[in-house]
Image 1 (spheres, rainbow, N blue to C red):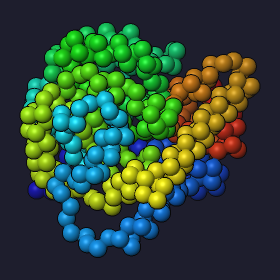
Image 2 (cartoon, rainbow, N blue to C red):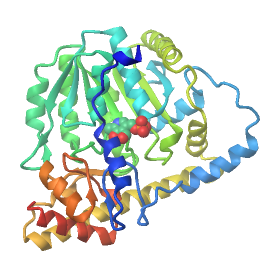
Image 3 (cartoon, protein in one colour):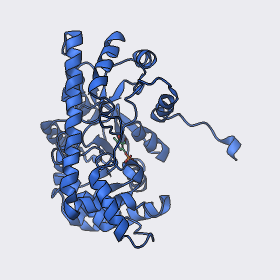
Length: 395
Ligand SMILES: Cc1ncc(COP(=O)(O)O)c(C=O)c1O
C-alpha cells in the first residue's frame, strides 16, 4: 500500500525552517516562520501564561477527557473576546479545535456536509493552508483579487468585482485582521461595503482571525468580524489562540458558527461535535485551560496578558516604522512607506524570487519565496541589515 503513495507538494514554510536550521552563518536572520520573536530572537512564554500554568499545576486533579466540543467556559470566553455582544448567544454554536488550523479545517468539513457544491473564495494571495486544505477536503475553489501590487494595499474594487460572481451559499474566506501574507487590511468603510454585498448575495463569510491584538488593538482588530456578525444571518469564524497568547504548540482554537436561528444553531452544534469526534475526538485541553483562566481574569491575569500583548503590538509597529524610515533614507523615496501602514506580523516586500534568493545567499536573510517577511523576526540592529540587503538586491 505505502509504495503506491504519491509525493505531496512540499510546504514552503516548513522547507524554509529546515534550510534556515542548516545554515551555519552566525549572523543569519529568520524572517520566515510566523511566530513572534522578541528583540533577543526568542519566542517567550507570556508571563500571564506562565502564572496560569502554575495555578493549574496546583489545581488540576485529573487528566481525564474533557468534552467532545471542548470546555464550555473556554468557548464562551473566546466567543466573547471575538464577538463582544455582536450576536445573540442562542444563535451561536462552537467547538474547540486544535489551533486555528483545526478550526478552518472543521469549517471546511462543515461546509462539505451542508453544501458540498458551495465554492470557497480565497484571497489572492492568502495563507497557503486555505487553498491546500479546501482542496484536500474536496471543495471547489475560486480566488478573488485582494492585493494591489503597485499600491501595495487592498485592491478593494477588484475584490468587489470578483465577488460579484459568487453564488448564494458560497463561502468567502476573510482574514479578520493582519492579513497573511500581505499585511494590507480592509478599512472600516470597506468592511461595511463588503457586508452589504455579502448580505445581498447570500454569501457565507468564513472569517479567519489568528492575530487579534497584533494589529490596531484587541477590540479594534475585531471590528470586521463583529460588523459582519451583527447583521448577517450566518457566519463562520475560525479563531486561533496560538499567536496572541503565544501558545503555538498547545493547539488552542475555536470554530464559531453563527446560525440563522436557535434551532439551526442546535443542529450546527451537534454536527460540529460530531466532526470533532470523527476527526480527532477530544480536543487538547491544556492551552484552552490557560486561555480561560486568563480571559476570566483569575488573579488579574487578563490585565497582565493585555499589557503584554500591547507591548508586542507596539514593538512590531516600531520595527515597521524603523524599516520604512531606513529604506526612505537609503532610497530617497517613500516607496516602502507601506511597511508602516501595514499591520500584523507580515508584509510582502515586493521582492522577486531571485531577489529573495540573492538576499538569502549574500546576507543570510531568510524570507518566504514570495517576499513575505515576518516583521517580528527583526530587531533594531537587523532592520538596517535588511534595508541594505534589499537595496543591494535592487528592490
Ligand atoms: C491566517 C492564519 N490562519 C490560521 C492560522 C493558524 O494558526 P494555528 O493553527 O497555529 O493556531 C495561521 C497561522 O499561521 C494563519 O496565519
